[in-house]
Length: 365
Image (tube, rainbow, N blue to C red; front, side):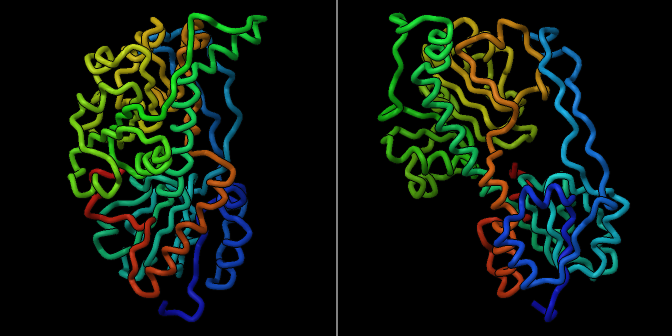
């Protein structure tokens, strides 16, 4: 680092800082930087999220879930310049407004942006990165939480646990028409070799599965290092377990088509924790509601979704509100995860796991 005590601006509300900065990281910050923390005076109240009008997917116009309360405050865009003045490092997270190129207009802007959250595509213009600014994202750390979600969802639906749970709560006992299945030794189709997919792959190793991965950017050499095999989309989508891990880019919109869904084997388990538009949601719901397949959905198109009663009551569906990457331990680890890599990059140029490569910007999540 060039300065004895470089300045770091934390462009996040006090509430968000409590969420993503653990005690060990706060100590690291105070030891290594002159820290400028945002206060309540720098924030804007987060808007209350509303359900979108009932339109689009199957089940629109049905029962609505309760409206969530106001979220964590975000940083007022007008306060960014004041907070970032003279900072060598910006620590950002959810609620940080988009960082305009004007922060670097004089050629003396921050050297690093360390994002204690996932995607950075809505945070910064890639031109800034091409100019040499180091960008770090906690996406790979969040990926571990997502991987656990996907594994848990697969096991939950493979064993038909929602159905047995509902039966017992309703006064029933064993369901002779249903028997769960093991994951061990099964073929698992994985669409996209992203960081979340790689986390799931690591967790699946003890299950000795046939891991068929479709990703046009995955070559045989990288696949061998991951312990998987490359596959066509049709091959991956013919598996009894299918997990989606793709970014929200034009090429992935609707890639899991009705035809692919209808060609899934009976009893297949589909998990989508990536992006709602990647899958034909009406076709997926139709096949799940018929009892032919099972699906765990954490993302939707649109979000939040509005479903009819028969969708909400289906035992073939596991529905969660975009929380696959949201864990208590995972969130508290985010700032420390990116800061350790950022400090190393400032010291000797090392690109750690959280480094955002401008060369892969177009295919990043």
